[in-house]
Length: 248
Image 1 (cartoon, rainbow, N blue to C red):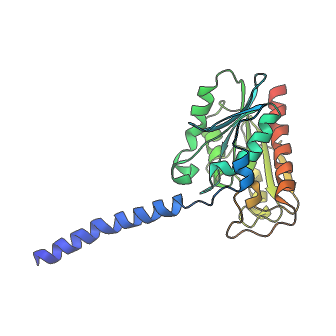
Image 2 (image 1 turned 180 degrees about the horizontal axis):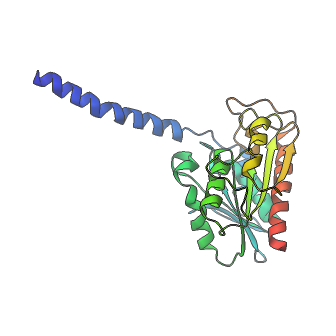
Image 3 (image 1 turned 135 degrees about the vertical axis):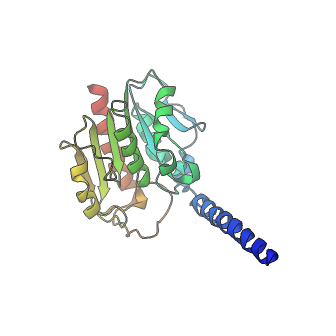
């Protein structure tokens, strides 16, 4: 009888450990960034790239007035957003992509605060992200009123508990018409949670995975435009928000 009880006790202890180990393995099994993303990680004549503690892109000349803290999508390698971050830095902004515990921004939605504190010389800040990263960026904006001036959502929307509709914050929501995850219907349903003057940018023919450089994604639809074309539209809409913040 005692031996049986010990076996059950070991099973009770072992099952949670196996489940936790399986979850960690699942969370850390992220797709590798595409070659275009890896190429964007090198510092150049005009752009300085730092890999720690965040993946930071900044122009080597001039002082950026506006900065963007970007949260990666769930289980997406932060490096997958390097081409967009680099392009924004080339236009004069500081961009910091924040790695998340187990690749899930839900475990650290407050991460933007550390980045903002590290660059006190920058006066205007936006926070944003892709998919789950965007939802957690919206959570940071909701929980930290007055800390950021703007929010940019890439294929994302706030949780119902993070209602920003009455907040004084500039918001741009960028979504793709062939997104199989953050579908246009889900984006449309998020409108009451965002300020009335939110800028809505639809990328015709784009999909969910082409907001980054990490390959296809399960559950997504096939895009009818190239990744480069979608990226150009994402960068342009994001830059318009940052420019507006810097000009205020």
